[in-house]
Image (cartoon, rainbow, N blue to C red; front, side, top):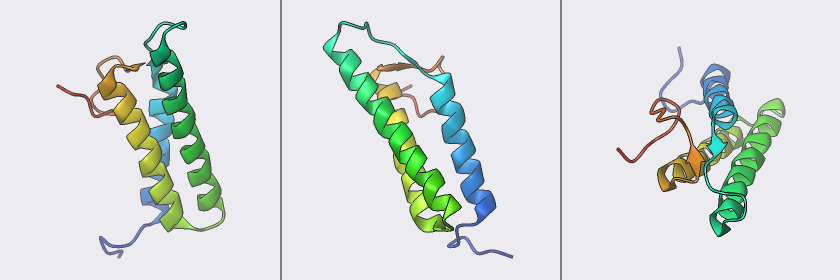
Length: 99
């Protein structure tokens, strides 16, 4: 039995999967020539980079850093969704929305 203070491979796998689904689901919502488009693309790039780092840490067996990175990645996604940079289809299961 694991404690609530332990990061397990199963727990990490769940978070990796949720973030991967979220990245695949979102669409950039702002026009291509808008300043906000650059911001949206940057948010998505940050999320993808942190997600990639999380997967690398997981492969190396570093579950603590993997868990930290995947949560940071999802934070970028949630922030972009709340700001309206990403169209997430009002999915409040994969994203934290404003209302």
